[in-house]
Image: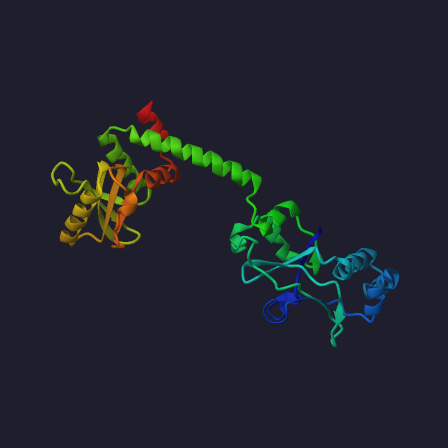
Length: 303
C-alpha cells in the first residue's frame, strides 16, 4: 500500500471543491496527453514536460512521477491532504477523467475523511510534524515520511511507543497513589498546598488552625477567583455535603475544592451539581502530583 500527499490546486484553490462539494482528487499539469497517460505511454508525456521545462531533465522527471502516481496508484492506496487544520484521507477510484480545463480528476471512494477509523478527529496538532511539514511541498504529489506511523494513525491504532508509555504512566500513577495514602495528614495537606502553588494559585493564608471549616484560602491571579480548600485524608458523602453548605455561607469565595485520598462509602453515589465545587479524589491528586513535578517531593517525604 502506498500513501501519497496531494496538494489540491495552487494555494489550495480546489480544496473546498474536492473535499466538501465533489469528493474528488484533482490534478493540474494541463497537457494534451490525457490519452497517452491512460495508455501508459509515459515517453510521450515525459517529452512534453521536458519541452515545457526547457530541457530541465530533473524537473521533467519530477513532473512525470507525480502525473504517473495520479494515474497509476491503485484503489487500495491512500491519498492525504490538509484542510482547515485537519488531515483528510481517502481512497480513489481507478478511473481518471479529464475536465474541460484539461485538469484531471479521480472520484473518491466514499468520501474524504478527517477522522480515523475509530472516529477520532485527525487534528494537525496531534500529528507528527514530519507528516504535517509536507504542506510546504512546492509540487503537487509526493510521498510522506513515517508511512507506517501515518497508517496506524488513520487506522486509529495506538503507536507502540505511546502504548508502552501509557502503561508505564499507569503503573507510576498506582505507585503515586499508594505513596500519597501513606502520608501523615499534615504532609498530605502540605502536598495539596504545593499543588495549588505549582498551578499558579497564591495562598492568602492557612486557616486550618484558626478556622475549622477552611484549610487553605487561595487566589488565582489569572482567573481573579478566590477559593477555599478543604483537605481530608478520609471522608464521606455526608461530610462533603456539609462542606458544600459551609461554602454557600461564605460569599467571598468563588470556588471550593474538597480534596481527599480515601472515601468511606460509594463515591459513585456522590452528586455535586454545583460547577463552583470541585471534588478531588486520590486519582485526581495523583495526576496533579505528576503534572506539577512533585514526585521528587513525595519520594523524599516517604523515604
